Image 1 (cartoon, helix red, strand yellow):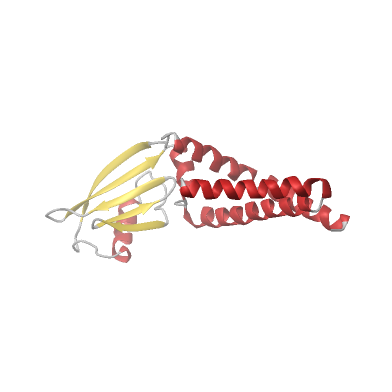
Image 2 (image 1 turned 180 degrees about the horizontal axis):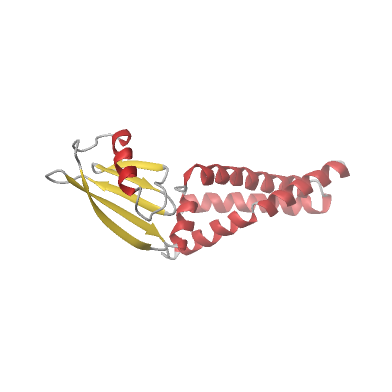
Length: 184
């Protein structure tokens, strides 16, 4: 590999590593805390009664205007992007808050629950991929950058004769550890 090409790989490796350092630290810290069952918490929880003048909305398209109109004058963040229909309830989930429209057992009054997350839970939700399209795409770019950084580091290392042997043994040791982890 020519010196100019090697220098280009090293620069790309370094700049991408620097750019993605903040999100890397978020993933490292939240992943480590999660392994120790430290997940953050719901800071505030609000419950409202919502009149269902047109009956229970069966689809998100019907529930969305009802919930948005109701929350318009309330002091909450915008409705999150991620939507789930679970146990007959409408659930919008994001890193700042979760909003759940709960189907009534009887009658025409539903319960609307807003759960606001603390900072640690917000960061954990970003880590888990429930933070909207921006963080999903940023995380995909981060994964591509991390893959490039690892591959470019290996390529650069294998080009240096004094490091080629130890690098190949390291790759082999990592592969063996991966197999042991799956088998064990």
